[in-house]
Length: 457
Image 1 (cartoon, one colour):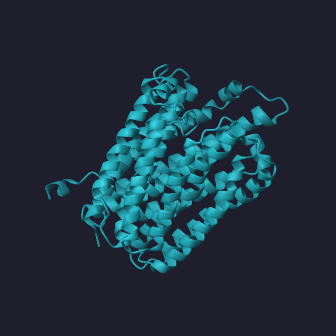
Image 2 (cartoon, helix red, strand yellow):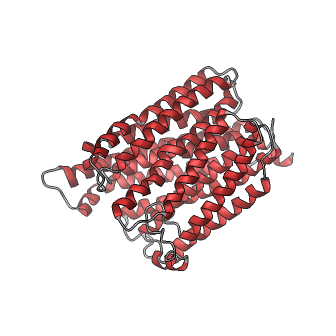
């Protein structure tokens, strides 16, 4: 059964894809600045382009999660969304606040932006990934509270399912943990200690609950497998994700001045963090193999399988590659970190947002699936993005291994910029792969434009 209020999700999906394209464009600018140092300087310095790239990533994924919740919560709850008007209002607040923040990054020096936005009254700016002006952070809290209230009231007054409960747990955790972005102590060790409570516990904690619940919802709808079977898998995945992810925060505490026991806790529990992602692969393929019907939306099923595999590779395998303390001692902060980050964010979060968009948008248009031609285009976008991301990761891994050896491990360590020059070939290849990835994103967006027949109808 479809609910009229699910249509608000379309706004969030359109906003998410538009911001995704913006994020990739700034990623290409950054990639070129690695090898052509004065490209677009001083108009867009490297630090500003990087800030915009990472901030757009966070905002478009949050927008995608919100759209996913507004689509699946009414259906799971068996009732209309509590307040479609509030959902639409918060979309525009979020979009305008995000756009103004990006304009601020690009238009004025960061220190000036801090003065203009009241950072002196409540200092929160200047930290990686949390560079947003204080006023923007307050706006994010307002949007998050309105969002939690809206979907929370829908769940409370409707049917309670495991998918809804897991999703709500992840969303509430996301909102609560973001509050630590307002805590900015003078002590650098304390600052980094709690900074990871936002950054790590988001992406290796509560976001995993959101991802798992969205994936479970799509698999229930596309395979016809009994809900109880999928729910049991979901319980196992989220239990493992939380146990390993929360204590696994310790792998960020190795070198910041915390007690030595974090070397053991971080190493042991981080080594276990690939397990929930491996179970997610088993879950997705097991459910798809046991499907009771062939869903006409083959592109969505492809995205669902791809999400499980790429999340395991990016977050699991590439995370494990440099998470043990004796290895991390040499690799910390090298291009291996960037390799892991790119594939993990794409596999775990970007792909699950595209999975729900792929499933939901045709249904909101009154179709089970897009035309065969548009599905082929979407599957081309899947392979272009996924294969190019694999190559981006491999090139950054090659750069990271060479960087680690030449700069840190060899008996005659070389200077940072000397090593950067020697790994520049990897950066050029990464840039070419990034252009292919952009083509994939644009194809994905174009595949949702209505056919001529649909327009005539």
